[in-house]
Length: 147
Image (cartoon, rainbow, N blue to C red; front, side):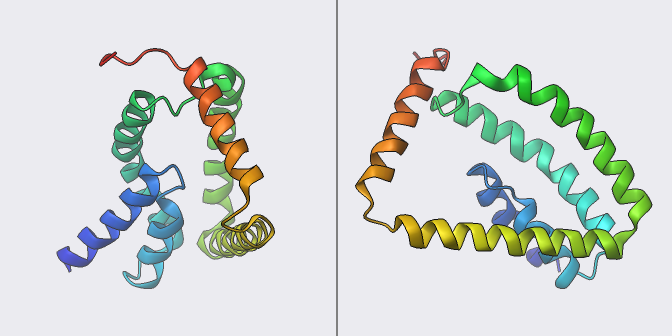
């Protein structure tokens, strides 16, 4: 069983490290294959998120992939709403939260599929825009300790 948890951690770490949310894979794995409850799976995800995020943040900053420009406006309300969300999850119960999470994953999959089909792999405008965003992120990122 340890090996299966290790594999789940590897999958969550890869997605978390890429900034796509390790919980997107970890929560379904824990609920479906490990028979953990929805709320317990979310709690496990939150605990595993802390070390994953610390490593990913350091590497993203080092690689100049973090734009600090809007963090002051994003972080305080996000932290406040995280507390609200935790209270709502506790009071709503695992079944409702599980349905909400499933709905979120379905919507996310639909949005991703739409943009993948709309943009396609060879869309030069999207590639140019992504390169422009990367260049602007590099300009706003502080120098890394290695510089």
